[in-house]
Length: 409
Image (cartoon, rainbow, N blue to C red; front, side, top):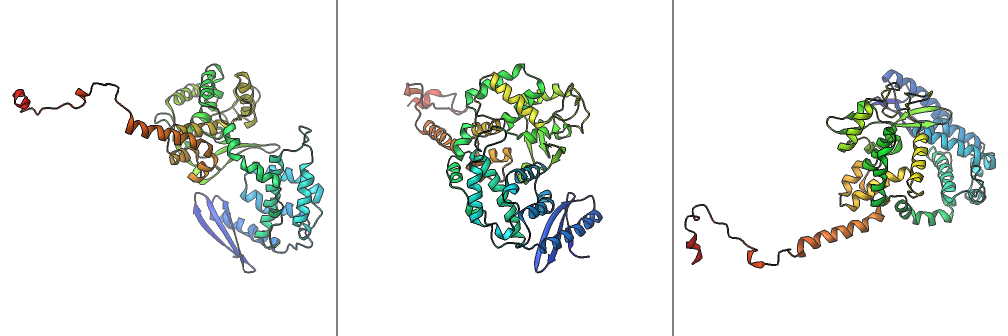
């Protein structure tokens, strides 16, 4: 058989195939080695198809179709594939889709992104935000990075067409994260106001601000992942919704996102109370609808976001703080209180501490200030009792206590 299959464990197999002195790889999920070998045959056919692509003939529109089917669906999350496809279909292909890959030069993309920056969003009827243009830039760049990896083109022409406003925006990256966090006072008010809300949403907000979980991680929790006696939560999958396709259970964002976290006692108490009332229909999922035609079925992620936006407005919290901002708030509060960056990184599921430091560097001056105050108290804080005569007390040994006067001479 052409190609090889390597069992990596946990139902994952690595497919490998050498073609025209170039080795191609792909990791797949399969029930057994037989199914993996069947997938290898399809993989080999795709590799051969890719090798026949001529940059002087293949249009961008045709290549996007190959990119989605042969790359994106295998390596990207379902929600990501959906967003990529619709961004390309709506903004990119109608404008430059008929150009061949060899005609897609840096000069062409400079003109394209200049045009894109002047367009209006169909939702708001306002000029596209820089962040929206940057997302489309990333999508188009990913398509051509794949073409470069497959040796269809020499270099990625999109990278050199990066608009200048992106660089200015990236300078404010950390400041934006800080603005999307709640202050300690606002965080306390949020927790207090949760007393009178639906128990389901109360627990979701608890998990977001107290554990720093992502929305998809929260909605992917199953009762089997919870050990309420030992107060732990094992994060093993995420739950997403793709318009027109339905709900999917996805792998977590990074390998380090698979983690076990200790639960606060108050959260465990709420979960035990909630467990008694929740209908158990949709695959043991914790957070489900409790009424309506979708009773017992998993929550739509948009429903959670919409609820939080309404609740945030009701209690007068800053509108700039999204649901994801509670995760940022958790990290920032822990860092300010002096928790080790490594521990914070592990709880958040970041791939390394550099990611944590990069995102939350705005909180580090506060951490440095706290550290300075601690060392000042340790070395220079004066005792409250001004009477220095009792600073050092002599403790007598038991055998000497019978002759206390002997020590007075």
